[in-house]
Image 1 (cartoon, rainbow, N blue to C red):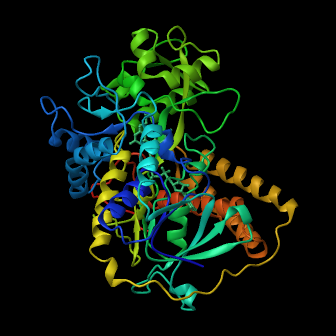
Image 2: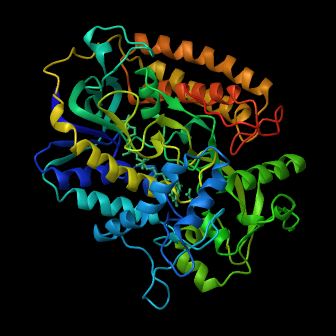
Image 3: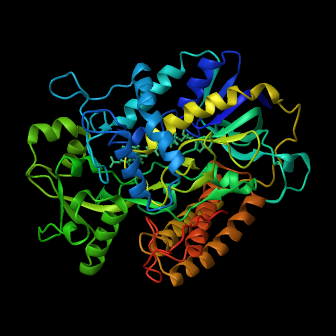
Amino acid sequence: MKKQDILIIGSGVAGMTLAINLAELRPDLSITVLNKTKKGESNTSWAQGGVASVWNHEVDDFEKHIADTLDAGDGLCDPKIVDIVVTEGPTRVREMIEWGARFDKDLSGSAYDLGREGGHSENRILHFKDKTGWEIQRAILEKGSDYPNITVYENAFALDLITQHHLGMVVTKATPDITCYGAYVMEKENHADIEPYLAKVTILATGGAGQVYRNTTNPVVASGDGISMMYRAKGTVKDMEFVQFHPTSLFNPTGEKPDFLISEAVRGYGAILKTLDGKSFMEKYDERGSLAPRDIVARAIDREMKIHGWDYVYLDCRHLDADGFMRHFPTIYAKCKSLGIDPLTDYIPVTPACHYICGGILVDEYGQSSIQQLYACGEVTCTGLHGANRLASNSLLEGMVFGQRIAHHINGRIDDYKILDSIREWDAHGTTEPEEMVLITQSIKELKEIMSSYVGIVRTDVRLERALHRLTTLHEEVEQLYKTTTPSPQLGELRNLITIGYLITKSAAYRKESRGLHYNTDYPNKLPYLDHVFL
Ligand code: FAD
Ligand code: SIN
């Protein structure tokens, strides 16, 4: 058993921003930060485009960033949260710079080089070449190591939250004051070892869930663990039907996974989407052309691909300034070249891929979840910032803003909480049979097929019904396996991914309209009223 004041599950931009802020406020608190695998294996590390923040006040202002965010969110953003994130954002970005994160300057060297992405009415994206996330992740892990009261663990897989259920109480959704006392954690160097990590306050900062689809830009750690743990603990999750597909992942005939992203910043730099016969097509769908918000562009590409039976469309960068392209997008340039594509003379084949989950754990403006002493931060949450569709480069910003807010909120309350004296040990059951690995890998493949075929960019009632039916069978099989097998990281992830598939599909079936990222051809219009889906 391990005891600490604060247990943060996840060390991406959300988890580390929170840890650093709290360590700064409270050197007396012991803060544990968990990574499921190695430090730096996170969605944060893969972020390319950058951080959206109002920076050049001569042309930009908060009202414009707020309007763009609300417009992308298609009616379902919480205006109060949008206001908070946009207005507190620049201070958090400045803090990130003070912590050592580098952002590119323009050629004069005196001002930041502000990029543009879909749905933004001004250039406001601070970036570090096309690997902004890598730079932020590096800076926050380094900064975090300055604080002796922060301990970062690797290969520590949180399996389940500890609540009154583990004290022998029956806990249901209706139980008042469900309280979190920490989590059961599998120390992966030694699979059989599942330890309770007890804490006064626990924070889920476990990131996204892109691995539920066949094609995704998300790394393998993005298996929706936090959202699934929350749902199992009878907490509330919200608006899970809003899954963002990025319009332009690189079509890679080698089948390499995860799918490599061609940043929207490339379109912000002037690249144009084209059909395989070289015609620009986005104008047919939106007056903003290739830089329309993501839901519109991804759906347009999906439609062009389906009408013509294509596996991809083209991104044309050939007219762009060669030096500028290589300076801004060295990683993308190198990746394309490694596949024999020269972006400056060839078209880049691109196809949509699952990228971001807008729904997640319901939290308030201080990151408090529906469970006592449990907060959530970052992509795992549904704060109300993104609504029905996230505006590009708003999520790193959300992690920074909420990380700081949660730290301050915890600081005001932590002294009222106690660490539980003891808790029952994890109930180890069954044995891991090597041949059962095939059941796990096959079930993951089945799940990805179901979600990609029936719950993708375009949905119908019949497809959703079929998906729910298939997911129910898969769920029963995997629960049976879980009951008779010692948990492994793979089995834990499979179980979580099936829950995510269920939550997305169930929420999608509930929404009888098309809005933002959710498009159902049986209900092509928006309802005249606004509604959220809580599960
Ligand atoms: P993550 O960074 O994903 O961190 C999750 C952490 O949780 C990891 O440390 C992981 O080990 C840990 N974890 C997960 N499960 C468990 C478990 N069971 N037990 C223990 N630990 C666990 N957003 C932008 O704003 N701008 C961009 O330019 C941008 N580009 C992107 C490009 C790509 C290719 C991708 C995939 C995403 C991009 N995004 C971008 C989205 C953005 O990167 C993420 O939303 C954000 O980084 C999420 O941060 P996070 O801290 O919430 O989660
Ligand atoms: C990109 O660079 O296109 C990704 C930006 C984001 O997902 O916010």
